[in-house]
Amino acid sequence: MNEIAVQTSQLTRKFGDFFAVNGVSIQVKRGEIFGFLGANGAGKTTMIRMLCGLLKPTAGEGKVAGFDVYTQSEQIKKNIGYMSQKFSLYNDLTISENIDFYGGIYGLPPADIEGKKNELLENLHLTPWRDRLTGALPPGFKQGLALGAALLHDPAIVFLDEPTSGVDPASRRAFWNLIYQTATRGITVFVTTHFMDEAEYCHRISIMNAGKIIALDKPDALRKKYQLPSIQSVFVHLMRETTIRP
Amino acid sequence: MHKGKPLILSIAAKEVLHILKDPRSLIILFLMPILQLVMFGYALKMEIQEIKIGVIDYSQSPVSRQLIDCFRGSEFFTLFSFEGEEDAINDLFMQRQAHAVMIIPMNFAGDLSREPLVDVQFIIDAADPNAGTIIRNYINQVILTFNESHQDLLPIPFDIRGTLLYNPDRKSTYFFVPGIVALLLVMISALLTSITITREKETGTMEQILVSPVKPHEIIIGKVLPYIILAFLIGIIILLIGIVLFQVPFEGSALLLLILSTLYIITALSLGLMISTVAPTQQVAMMLALVATLLPTFLLSGFIFPISSMPPLLQYLTYLIPAKYYLFIIRGIILKGSTFMQLFFPTLFLGIMSAVLLVASIRKFSTNLES
Image 1: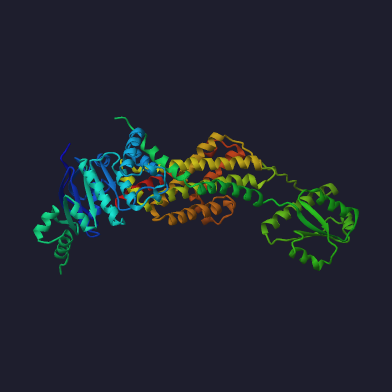
Image 2 (image 1 turned 180 degrees about the horizontal axis):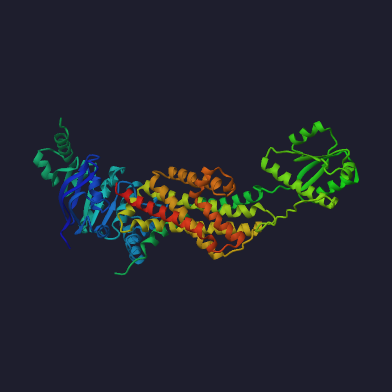
């Protein structure tokens, strides 16, 4: 297995004259929790969409799970999981039916899905709820279930696009426990977030502004470098420095 | 590694679940056509029965009574004698007690034996012009029979005898049942597909599916497949009701009808797909689908109003209405027993239309993802 999960070099995406992502180069190792910070419109979502094979880059190079983002998007899709900021399970289906569906669209055999379903429900303490409608679940549980559904096909990398927006703090902590579990299984976690406290949980973070990466390191290394007490203050400091120009 | 079931089937299976989880919509889907059919079948009749005629017989002669009996003999008329003043005729119409009034003049009997031409006055309520015309035609026919039986010496230069083919009783249900099939198939197909696809866009689940290895065309086919079957079932139910309840004949090949109906359904689904690529929300999709299917099919397909009597501009517009071609096909097969070769052109048009719509909407669907 390749030890580099995601590698990009000068990856760029233009919409018309606008550079949504401008020459981004990153390298993410297997099993790493890689945080992606930035204000809205900084280019995080565009970056993730390119890495997921949903959007072709305008220039630069990129490899995800060893596959090229230009030519092998089919292979990439088979080897990644994705969870968006919107809750992506079907509220009108039962928990069990949702899992069947997400296993099914990755081509998993029904017997495999059944096994993974039992394991996942056990892990999330949702076994008694399996035949209840998903819409009836509390938000925290929904988020965990959505992550479980995104991991059914054992992807090498999972992309989480603001997975904890709209979730209460207690559930957010529980969700981060799930993220750690995921990473210890050797799955690379690529996560974008608004919450600066969550950034502290990441192995490494990158801060994006106006399509460019303006900082990339371990959270404590960044704190030391700027001599600031938290990532929150590092972020604010960097935003001030890079955004306010005459 | 052994493979799971085809991805299209996973998508289709989930769509079936969505349909089954919403029994209210499902019941409406099946009840609506049945209700419409019964309503149209019994209410929307172009033929008029029990035409009430008030008779003022000033002649009071054997001949005038013969004329009245001629009307009585027809199943279309009920007659009553009107004793009031001629001024009161208006009241008859106002109170809807009569559709027409017949006035036989005093010297009817005498004139009939002497004069070449005798007047009998009919006053017809033409508030509904269509009904008025039909009543006049019926009356003319009865008068014609009376003239023939009464005066065989009367020279009749032409003897016009039309033969009515395919629907000799001129039952409008024969005409409407295929029309309703056409209307409901296009409505259900376009409406349901546009709603189901916009719903996934709205909730964000579409994105979740798109990052999976399922290809866009597999998503579309998988989502649409259950609705094809649903539309089909509903179409068959309408036809069966038409045949059992309204004795609509079925002259042609059922297989041919099924095949060409599938083509029509695909055209409608492609239309729904096209709508879903431009509609941002389910509400918009629903409105667009209704506007694009209901009114045009009602007004411009020849469902009710004959295309040949439309102004030229509207006639050109009818070429864009899929139901127009399907009506040729289904009326042809059901009422006339038309064969495929006789229906080649409508089929060709329908085929071209669905191919264009389908290619355009799949292309639009894929490019939408790129932004």
